[in-house]
Image: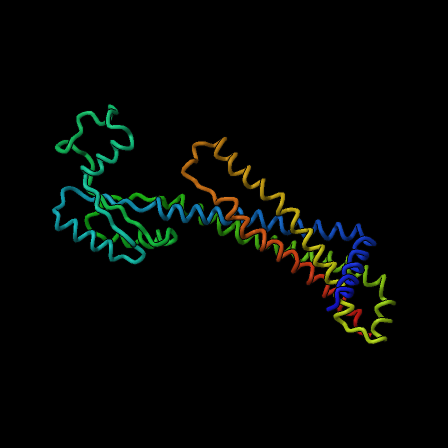
Length: 299
């Protein structure tokens, strides 16, 4: 393709955008709204999944055993629990080890530990169970009910289910909203390009009659769609980058009690969002432009 031809395509595209400035701006706003929702959904959804992944590493199942058990009985229970599907690791914690851990967490000088030692220790034998996925917690809990010698089980089932449910609901609703906004964006872009096509329909007919190919006629309008999609995508992404960083830092500043939660780094989130969002915006523009000019090429 000759440089003069490329120059002609861009000149015609910019001319069409300027002539229909109001519809051009409406198209860009529609694309920007779609990309904004996409960015927001990805930020929230990926962080919810990131928290679930953290919970997999930090939250397990604690199993407390009944009474005094022999070393052989404890080993037998450990093997039985380890054989349950989705159990990755089983660690035995003796009453002495549990007491030492409590002293490290609370401070050995606390009044609550006065009089407690190896001979006077109310803590139980226990197992700390690690799972292959936090999503399999319920299945493992059901299996543990059949293991003899267990006194009680502690787990974060409620918190886990709440986070997983929020992740599912938010994911489905975000996809639906993005689909709706994507359709609206394409329709507005189609109308914008269609106005340019109608204004130039006589010129298009003449070009067809003198032998211009469909793609030669189509390219200026495709470039219009690409520019609309590109500009509509870049603006919300550039705005979203610093906003995400400020929101995550503000959460830690004003809610210091949730320091156990870690958010994904800004670079990791937008390292995916920027190329994906720009590509998505361009695709919306191309779909809108190609669809709008199709019938005008039938001469």
